[in-house]
Length: 127
Length: 103
Image (cartoon, rainbow over all chains, first blue to last red; front, side, top):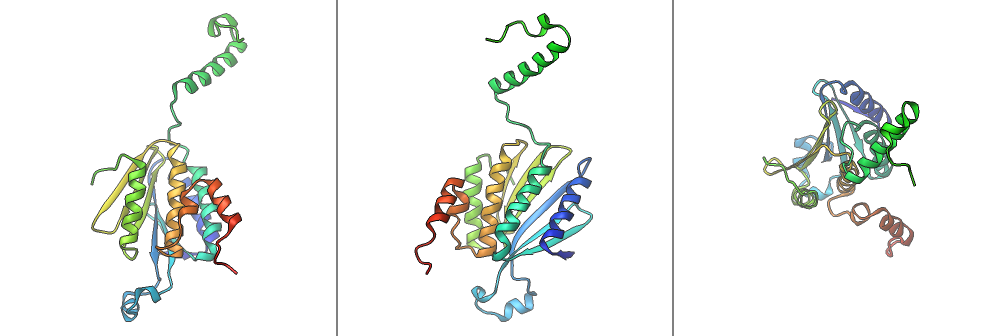
């Protein structure tokens, strides 16, 4: 397990998503952690005394990367992480609303119609 | 483990689960591009909550949940998540107002 800084982690995560587009999955785990061993944890009786961070791990089953997020970095990481996700989660289905779909189809047909025949594809003239 | 169908229920129960045992709870997001599937899981090794989707519109909801968990984990289970869980407007308002206790 490689513990990375925030930005290298995001870069690696981007690569990981790219590598697994054809096949494979990517898991990202968030966990609260003190980054201390169990023995060290047991010495501290009151759990609240331990400092906590958010541990982020990502794996594709072959390679694992991780990073620590302190409260200070949280806002910044949160937004860049959201950007990475947004950029890669493109295989999900778009909302299938009937009217919206029709409108989109209509646009396409109109576009095609202009190239080929006007009368066939666009029976109703736009008002 | 069965998938929870309702997003609201999933969010509510997963936050409850985390707050009940922050030490051993984790939040996993699995994305499979080739099948266009996204699975979210929250578990404390005793109970497991899962939510599955293939809809692009759920990405936004997931982002919100991500933010909630980032806040809860980095700042502590008692952290105020009303800002992240509410709408962006609420967030802006809250940041403008600030917390009364400061100063």
